[in-house]
Structure formats: C-alpha cells, structure tokens
Image (cartoon, rainbow, N blue to C red; front, side, top):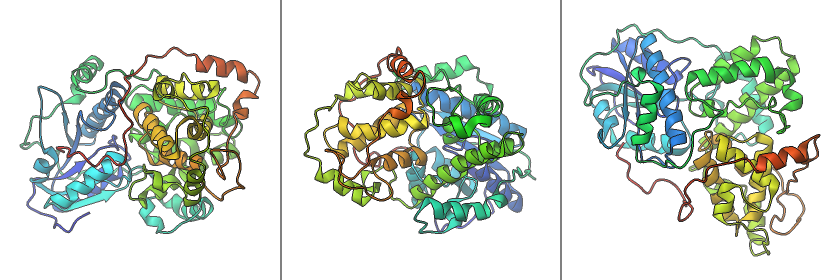
Length: 475
C-alpha cells in the first residue's frame, strides 16, 4: 500500500484488524505470521473501537465488542498477542495505529473496499513510514487475483469457478516465535477477560447512539455465528433452493451476513461445513452460488469503485432515466420519521423496514422490494439513494458492506434498461410485493410483520450526504 521498506529491527509485525474480527481462517493474520516467521519476530494483533465511526450505536458497538473479545481469546490459543483499545471518556488515546506502527517491522491490514476500513487504511498508508500490506480476508478468492474489467456476473462466475478450489483450504499458519510480551505505547484493554456485563458497561459508557437496541436474533461473537452455522446445516440447507426466496418461512435464509460482514466467521469455514454435509447437491450448489458468486461479485465490483456507497455507482442509463422522471408527481412521498420507523402507508414496505429496525437484518427477497419502493417514497432519486444507504448503514448489522451497497445499486438499475415505463421509474423495472403477499398466509404474515412493536430511534436532523471523508478521525 506504500513504498516504505520492511524494517528487520522492529519489535513485531503489526496486524491491524478493523473488520475481519476472527483469529482462525484469517489471511491477514496468516500473512503477518509468515513475515514474522521469516524475520524471527512475533506478531501483534491490534483492534481498536472508537466512538466516532459513522452510525456508532449500541447495536453495532456490542456486536463488534463481542467479536473482538473472541478474537483476543482465539489469538491467545494461536500463541499470538492481541492488543485492544475501546474509546471512552476515561480512556482516550490518539494515533494508536501510528504509535504501534512505529515499533513494527511492517503492518498488515485488510483489503476492504468499503466504508471506514478502506479509507482509514489508505490514509495510514500515505502517512506512515512503515511498510503496509493489504490482504483480503472477506472472500474465498481475492478479487485482485481475477484481474480488472470483468463486466458481468456470468463472466465473473466463470473466472471464479476456475480457481476457487485452489483457495478453499483452511490452513492456519503456526507462529514460530513466542507471543509478543514487550512494551506497548498504551495500556491494552483485555476484552478476553470481560464478561457480557462488562461489555454491556463499555457500551453504556460510550458516547454513541443509545437509541438503537441490540438485535435479539444475532448474538455477538463466534458462538452466535456457530449457532447460525448449525441452523444452516440442520434446518436451512436441505430446502435452500426452494425456500430461500420465501420471506414468510423462517427456514429460508442462512442469516449469515452480519457475521460475514464483521469477519466473525469466514466463507471458507462456512463452505467446508456445507461441503461436508449430506444435503442435496442442488441445494449445496445454490448456496455456494449465493455465497461465492454473488457475494464475491459485489466485493469485486466495490474494489473498482472510488466510493461504492455513492449514487454515481448506479448504472448510467438508470441515473439518466430516473433524472428524466425526477419531476414526476410523487403522491406517495413519506417523511424520514415514517421511513425510519416503518410507519408509511405501504404495509409491505413497513414489514421490510421493521426487520431492519428490530432485527438489524432483512430477508434478501424483501430487500429488493424495499429498495425499489424508496424511489417512489422520497422526493428525488438522489434522496432515495441517500435514504436507502442511511437506513441500511445505520440499522443493519450487515450494512456498510459491498454486498448491501451492490444490492441497493442493482435495485436502482442494473443490467439492460427496459422500455420507458411508469412515472418516477422510467426504464427502471419496478417490483410488486406478490412474491410475499400471494403466498399461503402471506397477507397475514405481512400484517403481523408490519405491526411488530419497535422502539423508536432518534431522528437525524438531515440525511448524511456524500462520503464520510470530511472529518479527521484520530486513528
């Protein structure tokens, strides 16, 4: 990521994790160990959690802290030191990454194409005098390996399938040097020694959004991910090909995306478990296509975009037709408060939004309807995009992700344009709620889902606009 040299006289190799919060099956850690073994140096894993990341809330903070605690525990089992810092009123630190880097031989980070992890890594690489390397930990096949210019899902699938078998093996590299026990430029928080109550107290003490409740369906940490993996094997996988699009059936979706987003579990481990089951081959193939083709396709797309969360990533033809219809009458426009709380005049949309609001997750089939309808529920296309990203990023545990941005962009217009159609949408295809409402029990399910009890979160004075690069975060 820069032109600095590796310094053989460093105290350790620094592995700075922001999102890949796992100690096993983590290519960033393995790459750090490989260099450390070559230099005869230990690896120091570092994870810090600030209060001022965009959309910091109880929901996100507690999920991250649970993952970080397990990261530290599993690092110890691998013979690695793990330093952690949780920003709070009585424990302020500035520039910790730079201070840790000053004693390192080199630094390894995640090759992460979206949100804070991307631009903070790029900023540090520009400003540090330490050699810095980015390693992909989110995908089975590193997107950089596939080359540039793949223009369709079909072409991507073909290239990906040709090499994915070479990248599916899990082989955690052993550290040849004892765990680092030397000096640090700060007092590390030992999250591995924290109880759940201790983590709850850290969340309460943070200057973050306390109005957004934790998700009851997604417990933090590796145990939560393994519970979802067991559910996938026992309940979901056997009928995955036929039930994954039915939002009314709780057995249809894997519900893995929050754990994959924060790197609590990696796609290799998931696929190894899937491959070892006796589920029908067609069901396993469909799951593999969703996890390895579609998810990694969105990561590949994001890597080539300057800012995957920006409206200009939407297809040019879609932006043109939406702009041409921007002045069409919009009788269904809703307030931001009603959109945030899922209290609009559209029952189906409310059922979708209540999943984000309460669960911190939304069924994929509902997401497509949800995103397309926002175009008609807001004053103009740019506001629609900003609203979709805001609701996704603030509420969802898998927001701020290449896959969720890719799904929103596809809903706003992907592929080839159709004929100029209804007002507001133009050539962008619309979507009805028939795939849910017309199922047995669908109307009742939508009614119940749209009226679930939810605590109202605080309402922002305005929507965030543009990139998150305006502030100077003290990394």
